Image (cartoon, rainbow, N blue to C red; front, side):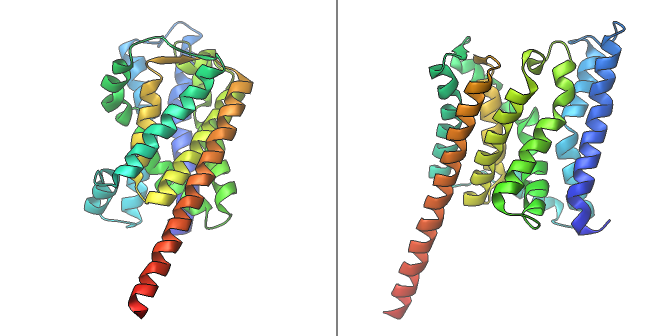
Length: 262
């Protein structure tokens, strides 16, 4: 397999395997089998949900993009500037505050439930970023600019979830797919911004996990306007934080040059 085909291989394999499993559950449901919550259904559901990190890790190691040790360090690089941790928490909160203000989200459980569910959400969602941010996004950016690469990553990410909208019992079952896709595109931009300013896949994993965990305490109804407004704000925040990061790096570089000239 050539390195340039890694993004195509990743998308085909992850969507292919996940869809076989998830659409299989949907079809079985029509005949009264694999109903939501049954042991076999949950096993197939979880395998489908974890194809992204599994396939991503296999491809990265197979193509020798990094060693196993380097990959583990990349995924679990906890040592990051405190300002980045503050930013991802604030970004996650903002993405929920807007729907609350627009009366499309309601706090339905204590917020400590979200905190307790965070470790589970790292496995049940956060690790997807190994694929989206380490493989798909950077390879798309080799062929197109940051904006289109981020947009396309968001679209693929949303499409990957499609079977869940037909699977009774899932959160997505009661949602409009297009409202969900708009929300995911917004999240794609904030995640791309996090990776661009920090270079840390761990921070992307953590943001994704926090966002999913907050959903355990905050119930959000499907609403196109709310999703659109939230996404516009989130995208604006993404570009602002990228611009500030570039400005700070430029000032630091100038200061370093001036210091050497003295």
